[in-house]
Image (spheres, rainbow, N blue to C red):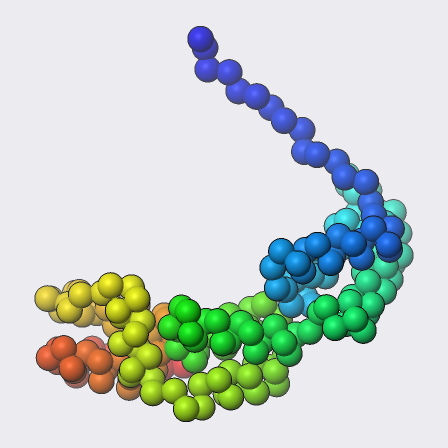
Length: 188
């Protein structure tokens, strides 16, 4: 049998009115928590009046429909960036063992307002022993003690990307007996 490539055409979806768009949004929120920005990006292409197939059919009505759906979801308390920030922070800290900076960066990338990020992340990480959390991250990732300078640099980079401060990373590496003075790290 010869290799046969099946070409499929993208499924064209009918634009949704406000009621159908609301139901779609509720289903999307039931599957996974989202920020307002994420939900707007999800709803925009599905709304009546949005861009379709290269032609624009009055983008203003689509924005108005999405705004109305988002407003209704907020009134019903189905959509809340504050609740999202609190839950996301708690889950990343407790389950993923991420450091403070990683969680702050992820929330900012998801469109959560700076004030909410600062408040919720600050509250969640206020009493956290950062080197202890870094050790938990190391255990979760099953990281081994680095045996060479190259492995030490790789471990340090991994811990910094996980959101831990340079001071916490250095403390953990020193506990492993690794000379960290050799490495230069820019924080920020």
